[in-house]
Amino acid sequence: MTVTEILPVDKRRSKVILDDDFTLVLYRGELKRYSIEVGNEIPGEVYQEIVKEILCKRARERVLFLLKSSDKTEQELRRKLKEGYYPQEAIDYAIDFLKEHRFINDQEYARRYVEFNSRRKSERQIQFELQRKGLDKEMIGDTLKEQPVDEAAIVREYIRKKRLFPEQMDAREKSKVMASLGRKGFSYEAVSRVLGEIFVDD
Image (tube, rainbow, N blue to C red; front, side):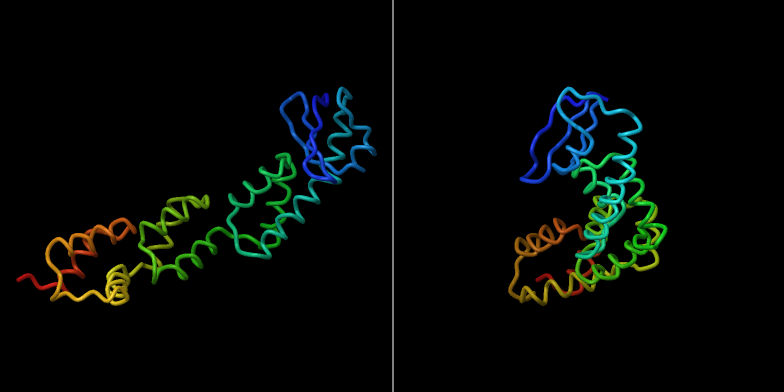
């Protein structure tokens, strides 16, 4: 592996770009310790030492730090590490460490997420958000079967908070309400059912 470029990230760290499209982020002292300069070769055993002794441990500390602020899915953590230019070996090591010590569990994450959001978000919106976080469609579907979203109750609460008065609304205003709730992901069936309960046509 040949060092093709070294670019500063901040005052203390630099990106080391290698000829086989690998990029590492190291501190200045580490660059000196391993004689990393543009044009120099990094022997395979030296690269492995850098990964195992420095970057794996640093990746582990990074994900532990990220989990202090909020729960995250495996894919979110992998994405964060990739954005930090950690090599795949270090990413896998950090994620395996979290799983081994039960710091992450996507299924439990899905359950907590649905439980927290099932009284304010539509099922479709929850599905979309969990998929963006990297969760499997089947896992999301199973979780929603265990903890169904009562969309009708959320729609009723929405109407109450908006202080809508059925007797004062015409067909156009009713359509606007339906469109607004549809954009939030609520099913046509759920919205129609609730509006049918609330709105009485002239």
